[in-house]
Image (cartoon, rainbow, N blue to C red; front, side):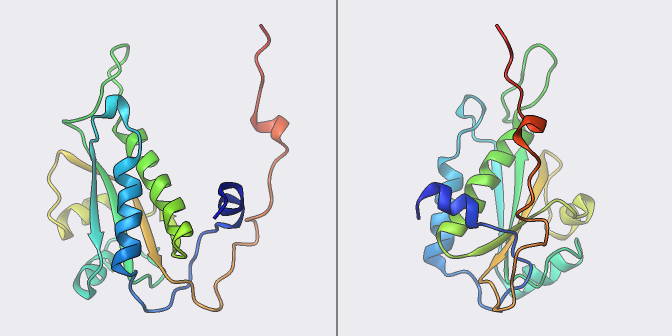
Length: 172
């Protein structure tokens, strides 16, 4: 799919068929994560693939925003493996995890897999349900599957602020 067509057509799918994401498509989505740039290429991302009935049942204890998706990817970072900005000690991990999640979100669209980025989850419950160590920090949850026939974009999906409100050119 042509890139601008892909980003224009992609929307957050919140209604899925029960079919799990095909392994070939899931492999391509995960490859997109593997290729994503990270701070100094330290690759601190850790991705938990939730693709079984048991895993999805556990997920449902951690968020109500799963939308019945048959597959999910929990994107985390290892705080011990991040690049650290020397000026203020900021870790690259949250940004790295978001870059990785964005790559997977777009790869999912390219594969014909509907996907929604969910930040509304309980990270403490995630840690408990999936035995996530303390140094691994959950950032984003991508719920995914094949869009149901009734799936449609949110009503605000195609409403945008004028670019002059969000972009500023600095004068030299």
